[in-house]
Amino acid sequence: MSASLPLISHLLELRNRLLKAVACVLLLFIGMAYWAQDIYHFVSEPLQQVLPEGTSMIAIDVTDPLFAPIKLTLFLAFFLAIPYVLYQVWAFIAPALYKHEKKLIFPLLLSSTILFYAGIAFAYFLVFPVIFGFFTSVAPEGVEIATDISTYLSFILKMFFAFGLAFEIPIAVVLLCWAGVTEADSLAAKRPYIVVAAFTIGMLLTPPDVISQTLLAVPMLLLFEIGLVVARLYSKPEQPATTE
Image (cartoon, rainbow, N blue to C red; front, top):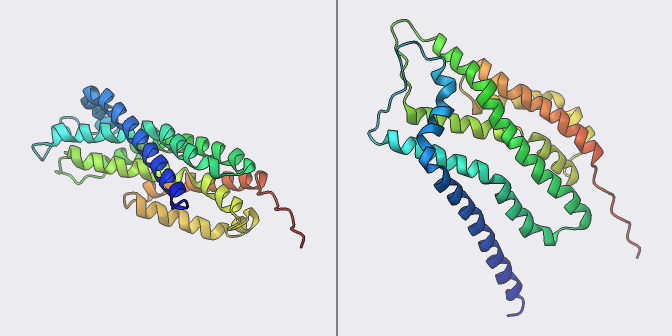
């Protein structure tokens, strides 16, 4: 009975942390819901800027004009709540960490948040104008471009997640080296395979064109190199030898 009490207390704390994270997302969503249409217009701007004159985005489903902006606003609320969500994760696991682990984990959580936002910004400001300009320029003659707003939303959310996660590569490298799964020098020796893997991931996560794949793969490779540098600086301290 006594052994189950700590487990129950941990589960209750986990539930409370999850509820706080969900409440934060909902509060942000409620606060931004009034501007849902404006938010969607801002996010669709990279495509609207390159649409041929006289064309516009369309809504195929009768409910799309309402639910597409609402769905986007909900995802935006989650993106904005990520620092608070990660703080709840940190607060839950911190008591179980050693002092030297706390010194590493908190900076990793902070840097992972910044990198995720950087990936989204990179996709919006640099990638979208390039690929949308390319797609609209190669439309066959006589084909009128009229992108459905729901389809566009699904596309950009996929791209946001792809670039946001891709920018987490330095964190993944540091954690793998810190956990003893591999070493920085070992990863560096596998660089040719990493290059192939980066372009393969770019092919799977982006539209089937070389431009999108390259725009994802090249930052991944640069971030991989940054991860190697950081992993060498923050190598895991050796455990003291035990005496029998």
